[in-house]
Structure formats: C-alpha cells, structure tokens
Image (tube, rainbow, N blue to C red; front, top):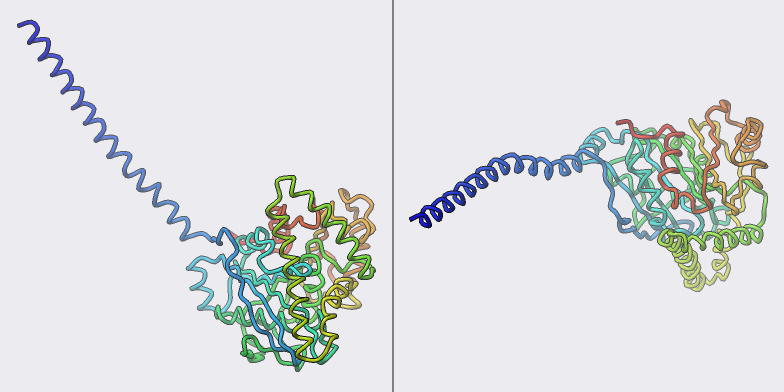
Length: 402
C-alpha cells in the first residue's frame, strides 16, 4: 500500500512538473514568437528603406563605338545604389537628388576595378549613382582627336547614353566637336538647354588627367572635380613615368603578403587585361585600315598620361569645389616630388598657396580648393576605400544627408 502511494505521488509530481513546463513554454513562446517575427522583419524594412549595391561588381557592358572613321570598344559600369523610392522620385523629376558622379580610371584599368571604392562613392553620395566609362584609345582619321582628346568626346557620349536609359539628361551639355559618336549604332541627339543632372568628376591616376580635361571641355555640365593619386602634376616623359610606375607596382605587389592579395591582384589583372586588350584589338584595326600606325595607339595612351595640367592648359574657374588627394607612400605620383612638399604629414599654408597658384591659378576663390595627403600607396583608393571615399565626398560637399 505504501509502495502504491509512493508510485502515485511520484506520478502526480511528474504530471505537475510537465504541466508547469508546458505552461511556461507556452507563455515563453507567446513572448518569443513576436520578438522573432519583429527581428526577422527588421532587416527587410531596413533593406527597403536604405541603399545597397551588389557585393561583387555587376556585369560590365561592352559597346561598339563609332568615332572619327573607326570602330573601337567601349566598356561601362553603372553603380546605382538608389532605393526604389529614390528611383521613382528621380524618374519623375528627371534628375537625382545630387549630381551624378563620373569616375575615370587609371591607365588601362577596366570599369570593375576598385569596386570597393567606387561602390562606396555610390552608397554615400547625394545622387547614389556612379558611371564608370572606359574606351580603347581613339586613333581615327583626324589626328587632333587621337588619344585623350578623342576620349573627351567619346566618354561624354557614353555617360549620356547610360544616363538616358535611366531617364536622366545632362544639364548644361554642349558638344565640343562636329565629329559624331555612335554607340551600338545609336547616335544621341545633341540636346541643349535641358534640365537634368550636372556631373561630379572623380579621376584616379591617369583618370585624374581625364577628369581635368573633361571639366575644361564641358564647363556647363561639370561643377565639381575630385582627383585621387592623380597624374598631371609633374613634367616628365614616357620613360620616366614607366619606370616610376614599374617601381611603384613592385612595391604594391608586396601587399599580396600583407593580407591585401585580392585587391592587389585584381587591380594588377585589370591593368594587364586593359593594356593587352587595347593593343591586341589595334592589330586587326591596323590590318583592316591598312594603317600600321594604329598599333601605336597604346604608346599614345602612355604619352597622354605624362601631360602636365594647369590652368594655362585646362580652365577650372567654373568649378564649385576642387579636391585633390595624394597618397603619402605613393612613389609613382609622389606628392613630395610633384608638389615640392617636404613633410607630407604637415602641409603648411605656404605649400597650399603654392599648389593653388601653380595648378589652379584661374580659380578666383581659393577656398574652393582642398589639398590632402592621406595614408597609402598608389593603390590607396582600393586599400583604404572607406577613408578616401568619405574624405573625397565630404570635401566635395556630396555626402548624402540623412
């Protein structure tokens, strides 16, 4: 009898415990489930209301470019970080919240190189848009439009073509020559005095020269100029530039062993692919035109990278802000050699005044110009992409307001 009572009591205890646990579990689930639902829903709400870009570079478009009685290849990447709401608003008004950024790459690089940097520019900028146009070196029938002088025309038409598909025109645009450009057989109308977006130009290395040229060529359309580790600030020839670039490349290659292998190798491969692609495509072009001289277009591209840029060559008086950033450890575009700055860590007012007077003498308000020397090599915009993107956009007045 005592044993039966003990068994019965134990059973009651177990049942009571189980009921207690079940009750507690039920109450906890009532509390936890709404929390889990809210937590799971939060990222979706955040994703819809905030900007985003793909983790990896999207597909680069390839174009057939007709210009100056020849056909060359063009490549373009549009990084669009805008939210659906922003796109709807921009389509309705015909322009984004801020000027669109046009990014010019370094020598022979492809549009998807330095995506860590260019995607940050898109995410943080007022417009949320970055267009990256690249083309082979023009070497058509008219010598005055060989090299970068031809790119001045072609790259603008590529930007217009890409933005037109987004319902965005370029305000203040005016053609700079009578030679027409076709993109995949399409020629855009040269519309003048239309509302749309103005442009912010950002150039890296050789792209710094392209950006300065572009700003001079289209003063009505361009209001801001940014240059990172730029060429154009030293008198030198092609051999000196090539030697300096080779030395800097050797130094940068060491980064492969410093945890920066992916960025370094991707940039190196981008240069190789661009350089060899341009050269190899020049061979059939020369054969078809019976003009061996077309094979010299790669050399023309290198020579254009040695161009010395100041206000006597390219005006900058119309620009609202100018920002130039050099890398402290950059031995190719060396700020100490190019600017005569003895201590990059301490840029004195005299250094700044000399820089402005030497390279931007026509700019009436000197406060529009900012010169910075930040950490990093010639690959700094990639390795230190967050620092360079935020500094550049802040100094240009193009950081998105939250």
